[in-house]
Image 1: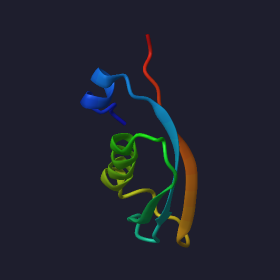
Image 2: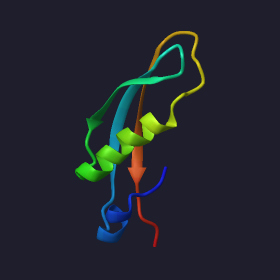
Image 3: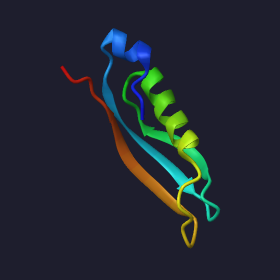
Image 4: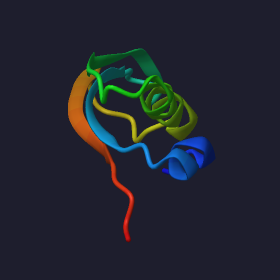
Amino acid sequence: MRYPGLARRMGWSGTLLIEFVVQKDGSADMVRIVSSSGVPLLDRDARETVLKSAPFPKPPVSATLRFPMEYKLEN
């Protein structure tokens, strides 16, 4: 995961909750932001990161994953 350049320059940070389905072939489907970071750019970047990270390891059945993603600038 890479921090978006504009968000870094503007000092934007936040935590969001993302959910998606890993299909039996490892593809990502139904990617959605469950709880926004409050920064649309970070939300879009998180969604794009999931889609670009596919294919995932193939599960025996389709699996729904939900987890927080944190964008935090280090000093």
